[in-house]
Length: 258
Image (cartoon, rainbow, N blue to C red; front, side):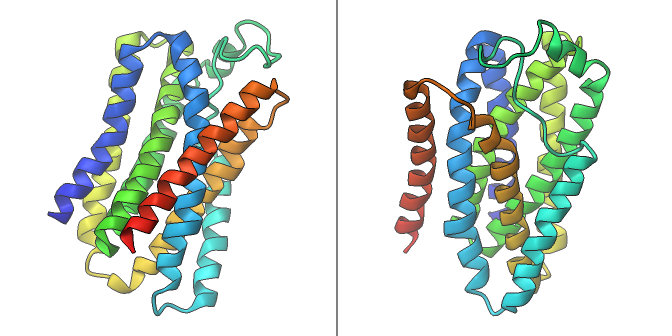
């Protein structure tokens, strides 16, 4: 049953993002992505700090080793970003009048980068699959909350990548297809994680801390900087509201587990 949960959770993020991208116009996607960025930032931070990290530190694992794992995880994702394999900006043509790029900037930036986006996204999704597997193996409720946080981030990321692929010259059908194939790497990571990580229960706390480092890094280095722009007060209030909703979801989920 745990393996089934893992497969469903890893499929959900990729499928939802593809369905959303396929059903909406690019202009509407841009507006949707901005709200989802705020929501997923709140979800990721709250999941890491209020649920996943406490679960790891309540284990019998050495506290200093767990903090060392957290530091190593943050550095690892920083290096992945440096290699341009992990983080992708969600900005796209015409998504925000506050961006001061010339027309065609995104197409120039994408250029030959469409394939590198797909490779990087596949690696990202594979890692997410392993994280989801470890969370479900540790505790089903923890797995659900962790998967929810990952899915919330995957939707704006995959939609953003879809728009980058369009700017890179991919047709709408090909961009959707390749995005869906890239999303399947999360399923591969989840299934492999189930069979490889499962027998090593002592590693669960460290994997949970590694998951938290991923959540914290994505939220702080990727999502929140996109929100830190001078905006009209209504847009700022909207950002704060979506952040609060994301955090509130996790608070309610954690409360219901106790």
